[in-house]
Length: 301
Image 1: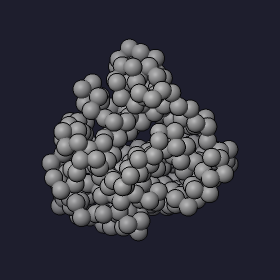
Image 2 (image 1 turned 45 degrees about the vertical axis):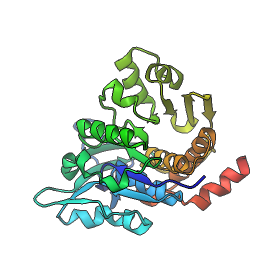
Image 3 (image 1 turned 180 degrees about the horizontal axis):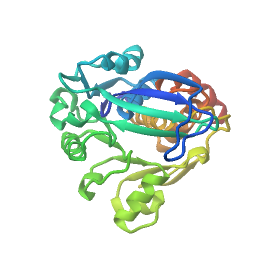
Image 4 (image 1 turned 180 degrees about the vertical axis):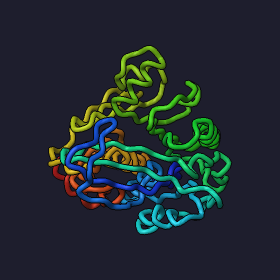
């Protein structure tokens, strides 16, 4: 089966990362051990993860014409993500995130959308809406634009992979347009409250009628879809930093979808990649290459 292209519609940020001994409590100021600036944003992170997993990736996003934009785009440029369809908006700041991490690998993240808030479904060019290609979306853009671009992609015959992160409201008919929905445990709780069901992949699949994957942190992931349940346990690793691990999972999974891999195999590769990402500090710089994933996937198959 020929590999399909991936179109990522989503956020592009510059991450300001503070390495802490302990995360600050409300109202508390703590000094960081180390500070760094790295490209980030869920859309950009997932684009880089998919590209490093071997997919052909096009980024549809927005940045400002400011000093942050080149830094925010650097990781995608280095990884070979196609940036021909970006919007560069004068007078608006590039998206930015403040990320505090502690020695246990936990994090706290605050995001300013900036130019991401102006991203429109109309920014997806017709030339990229190829039937059978993959649209990958998250929730760091305006929800109505996410809904609109999902509808466009569905009508065009694209496979829609939705990462409902951070959790946000989308109409049920829009959620049903997805081929695959990925949520973590908090996002699954959000969806279950919306539809009055249990916060499991199986229950959400029954309500929405689409394949649902629920990630479980260090316990791996569960999925439910037309072909039945799937459960994958990740390799055991020493956690250094969990920043971008979720995005790594989603981007690697989207690459597997673009290659036509079975769901179990795609989730297994995504779990391995996300685990590897947790062993390296940072966001995009922690995302593994396909060869690293292949080495572990081969030993577990």
